[in-house]
Length: 273
Image (cartoon, rainbow, N blue to C red; front, side, top):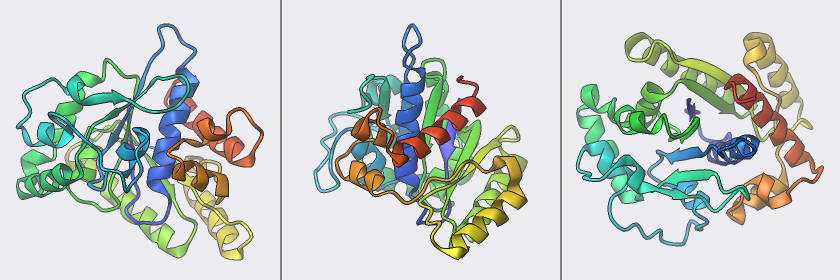
């Protein structure tokens, strides 16, 4: 199952959400024998998710020897898709992997794929196809714009998870994201489904947040997952290059509880539980 985490507006904490979901799903399936693995693919040219999963800070240069994802996407790679996969620095179960990317390479690949989008829109699908049998779940973190990388993700994905900020800008972004999904359904991927809409970084002390949450629930009903509040511990875990579950362990901290509930719901909808 390939799950694209997509939001066409900045602000909902998409990368943080994607990394925590990937780590949480890896933890959920770790008790199976043989232990299955989850793969995280960072399609954003800034490569924040890839840096984070490999335990690198944003200011620390990521040394990549040999090929990377961008080379596979533009057709210059010689090796196997498996050759550019590394084990992530978390969670403790050791069953989360990440695809190696170079920020400069991904930016160049985005430009090249855009120049011939009719063919380039299938590049990621072709890269991921041989990996489907190795990973029960592949999580794609996409850029916050409907460019070539995001469109590639929607073509390759089986399902989309949409994190959103409960603000007027966030609602606009949700509508744009849903419209982009519908275009891909009509033209390239009719089987693409919306797994859920995930209110994230919510501040329910604000009246607008409460009003918009009820509005979104009323309009999209069961697609809307339980909200995750703006939590200092989630941001702190990210600054330490950890997921929230590794950072706080099996505590009853609200950040762990809320994110855990969302991951459980995602796992059920993916058929993993």
